[in-house]
Length: 177
Image 1 (cartoon, rainbow, N blue to C red):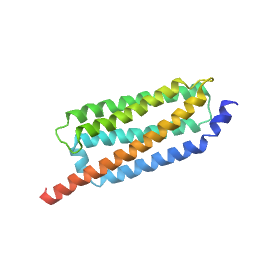
Image 2: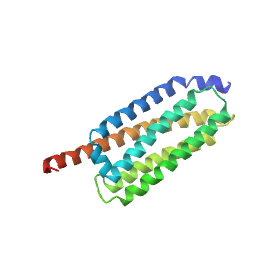
Image 3: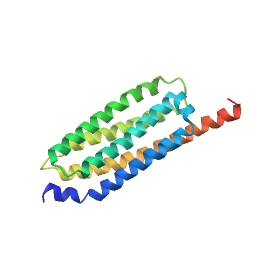
Image 4: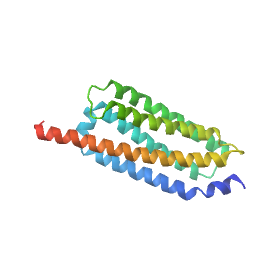
């Protein structure tokens, strides 16, 4: 079966995934902006927010690339590039999170969240490597798993962000600062 016919079967999935990612980005911005001072004053909170936004951004970008009617080699290049760029974006987040003097989020929890995200980015890069005329069906299945994983990781990260930011804001409110 031709590639364009097969990819058309995934169209609705990627439309939904992109819509989910865009919606969650908006909700995350609203949720964090309610306590922006806490986000700005806590390096590790900013780092997890950046990683979570990168996760959702990658889902959105991958979804866009998958619904564009183009050939395998172009899609392969786009997936590789987006995975590499997103992986590069979390380097500073990891570095600043480990150097943070505040501990709104526990260090091991933060590192696990960032590591799961990095593994998913590598998954996009690996899927791009299998995105050939001979193996694109397996790459498509792997990419679906990565997209779902990124959404689940982002939901978990968002919960951690909102709860930890809320706890800090509540503590500040109770102490009068």
